[in-house]
Length: 317
Image (cartoon, rainbow, N blue to C red; front, side, top):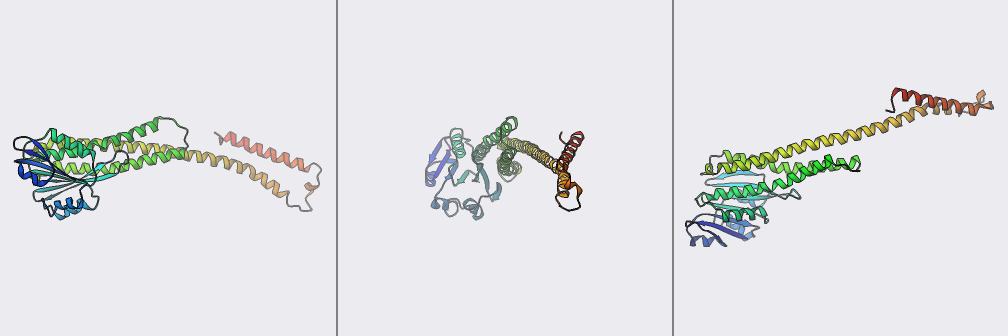
């Protein structure tokens, strides 16, 4: 569907359902939102009302693009990412910023766009360049939606680090790697958006942008904070990973040491048993009446002596 929000010269905000209705009002600027548009509605981007550049239209219609800013004469094309706080999956939101209009295009309904629409509807900027403010509101709402995801992961890490549970080391390591994967997804969204806001702040090609410089700086600061949260949490998960891998390695070393001690103790016993198991005729010990018990006593003394020696050396500490 297509919805239109127009600011009139008599300082009214009117909501329209078709582009033809714009002719009935003295409009200073307007916002056209393509929300889950049909194939016929998508044609308005190129062959219909706006005649945007084919490369920008291709970016809208087909592939998930990295956040970016492209300039086409007096139209500025922005690719933004909306993110689900639960799954951390991203969806593309495209903005066309013209001299006195904003066109947003997104294939799925987004609550961030709905909130931005309501904000602009009730607190519009009546100047001709009010479309820049509308673009800021959209970007700000998209970035604000990143915070619940980052805070949820941070809370999960803190709860995991400070809590006590009976899970094994393997299960704990799996949880740590799962949190690191979620942080990686968040990082792949936050850092490109931060680079985009840096470009917007420093571009000289968008007219009247200096009037809203502080607004975009505020969004950039939010992204800086998000990047710091992500990096600090990645460091914390790295420490947790190293901690549990060290515990796992230490446990393995303890097991190997125990098995080594058992093996070393039984080596001389196996040697003695092997010698007296050869059944040669000229072995006088085989004919001794107490030979069997004597060998057992010797084997016991050897085993206990080696055990005592290892104990003194601290192998069992």
